[in-house]
Length: 319
Image (tube, rainbow, N blue to C red; front, top):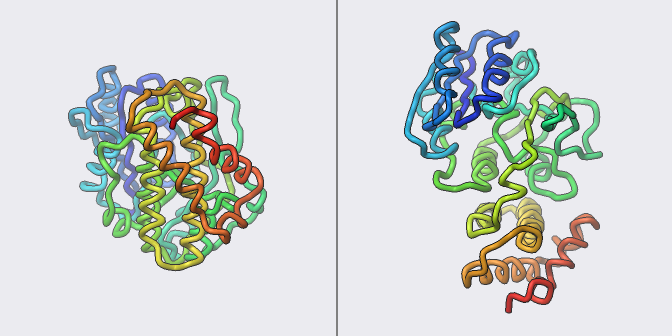
């Protein structure tokens, strides 16, 4: 089998048929679609079973609710394909999504990625993670290039999520998504897989449709200790690198992440605990100690964000 598609499912009955139908109608047909029902309490499991009943390529595994990382890991455990793809159950893909990328699957790339459109509740579509460094042609990236386009705030257009990619199965299965985390686990899984890549292929063609809900908890939820998880993973990535150029990219990413964490604290309802205050001061400490080389290379927009965050204790009265 050429491809295994892993779809974690949890209480998405409003969107699930749209997602699964887009998979069922793929012009590329040599795939299995592994549906991991993560303890849904609506009728998502029934919808999954309907697709399994009418199409033998769909497989349903149900488990108690353990979170999206656990569901994806379960899918990795049982996937049989030479390549691995992920789709989130409230998203959908164009009919040629996999055929388009798989045309180049035998050319020696460990990962192939395409562009993404954001779709909102009103059906509006916009490019996701747009960057003027992206041309209209495909791009072959070596290891330095892929890290730059994944970590550098001024160049980033490679996504921190697994869903617009196909990954060679031996690499995808070598790593696991961190369970018990709400933020940043996608980033770190993709980062770890990147250690195994020599060359990757990127297409700007927007064939993955990322559905962004208006009231997503990522943007509107209460700021608590889980809000530091993305920064924790960014620090972990930085600390794991040795190459000075790539490490500088990771340092910039870590500093900007720290500044955005401070902004999140400022703009969202938050708990007022000692641990939260210490976390915000740690963010400020990261920004204060960023190297001159990294600070110089950060784009102006992010430099303004860093400057604002540098005065976090004055702005937010957290001494």
